[in-house]
Length: 121
Image (cartoon, rainbow, N blue to C red; front, side, top):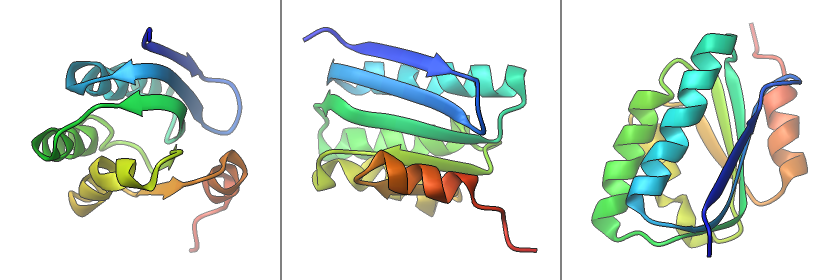
């Protein structure tokens, strides 16, 4: 199935949607493209809607992807990722271990609610 990605910069965060089959090259680019848009638009939060994405990654791919996500999105204050499969969380969990404030959710509402919360002072 065709891999598709889209970015919308309106609203309180950058919205990134992706669908279709994706292997490591596509998923690395899925981090690169929104990172470039976020930098140029001064967005500090992002929601990745990956409910229609079907990643095909090996355990080693997850490790590489997690490090890449942490590096490319390092300027983000918060990143929410919505996934349909619990097993697809590994890359996000690894990015969090590298210091990125990223959380995974099963619904868009939960992700939105977390992203629009103010940071405690």
